[in-house]
Length: 117
Image (cartoon, rainbow, N blue to C red; front, side, top):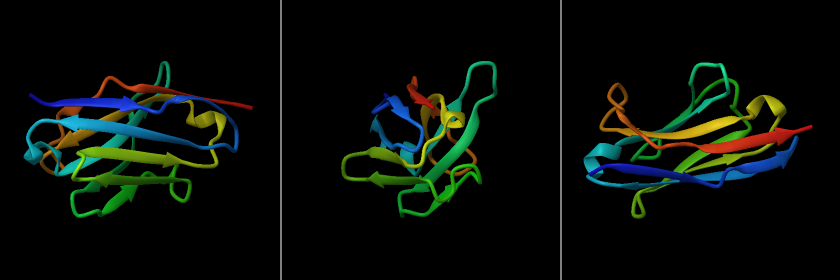
């Protein structure tokens, strides 16, 4: 009933940019809050950014000023514009969604982002 599918990952040089997308399907009430997480091999999944249906964003300190989260509610699509990428941004990026800030049980399967020096 609920599905999140990420796209837009790939390889980029340090300092470059990528734009990730997450297409969501299911009840609109499942997607009041949508966000991005990432996980590097051997590391825990970490929060990157989130945004509400009203457009209120929040960001992890590690990406503030470099990444921009946005959403198109009509399309049920979430975006992450990533600029000034560094090798430390290399990870699998996951889309996340839920009905509120504290309840976000839905996950995509991830898209790989690899940043080379």
